[in-house]
Length: 273
Image (cartoon, rainbow, N blue to C red; front, side, top):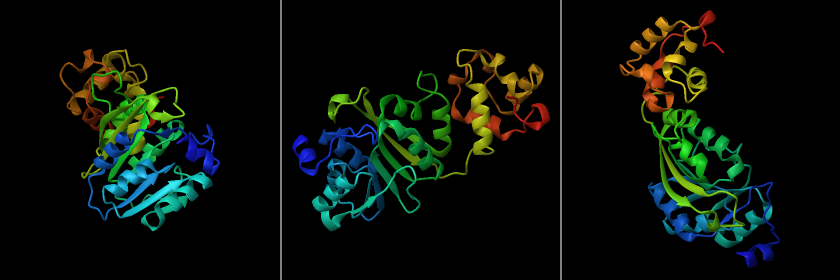
């Protein structure tokens, strides 16, 4: 890899978040997780030196678009794979993914969260991504774990997100300061489960604002401090009978979706800030 980078004149850039995956087994895992027909349109984010691109081609995918921001790497990818891929010099944060059946990529750790949220909100059918371990764990978090929180619930509103292979920092060049994690997202086929994305985000902001407090002390913030109204809200949302003794991190996503579908009970008909 060092030889190839030197030959094409690339020194890994912190500005572009360039830490290249060097473990082809991880690339094979990512390609295997796509699980779509060979003619499905797929976009790879950040082609780099082509490790994941090669794994996807070996899996037989025929409609592969590769986004690469660095012109030198883009030229290398085009020269390496020729007409088997369509290489575009583009910023993944603003690219169009509307025609993709899947988006796959080793995402720059520094911008992975906004890219993932954009893809989830757009209803991308399948996402396979290698991201910073802590970020991936939060998106795939399950109730009752330290990783579970607002990103977990937001992600669950759009898709089923699963954590797969951990990736140690030694599997990158140059090695980043943190480990990675491969995650997979499969879009929900049912209607959006909350009243709106904005309402859900606001409810989560309030209820997860103090993770260690019991919900008896947090839910009233959605009812202008009225504890009786908070109890009625929980009952209407079919929360468990012992909700008052629980913390937000112990409730499943459906509990927050249900709250968001109920009429606001705060001052002037909005959630109190």
